[in-house]
Image (tube, rainbow, N blue to C red):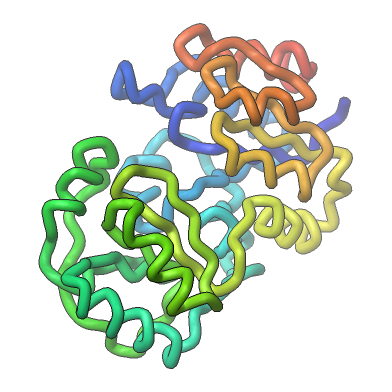
Length: 260
């Protein structure tokens, strides 16, 4: 197929956490696709600031844009084509409850993020796995906020859902919950970018490893699951390639005819 656009998850798709490195064969495959005139985009659950800290823009690839915050933000051609924001009044309601419970959280904006309160033991436990740099600590000042990353164990979930039912909650870690006002789906960010570039979804492919990557399928026609990916994703994918540590991305490119 003559693909026109490719979208890539970062963690366990481009970056091998076991080896603690981006996989060279996958990066080189993307560069070859780019040279053929195919547009390439990052597509991560990470906020933009985390993507920068994690080195995703330092790989020698001239990305054509990105989807960040799991679809909450989409950026291409020097402009935002999707940006979902939480209302200030709702942020204040959330803050009152979190502060009362002694919890801290990150406020995630389109380009930056910060902690609302000093780090807690829950945040440190979360950072044992997700190490993506230090962020400043200060209260909400009316800035644009796309999402919230709350550091708390799961016994807090029911309380927040009961008292703040207008939010969407996604727990992805024992001590990490992503919270937004509009449900964030990678597929929505992909749709916005493809619509902007007038690219047929049939000519776009996405690559990922986690269940959140299933929503890529809502924006494009070919979804590739890494061999190390979650079983739910593999069942919904059009192609299951080899593991990340077995050059899975490169092998998928070759199998799909993206490069030869």
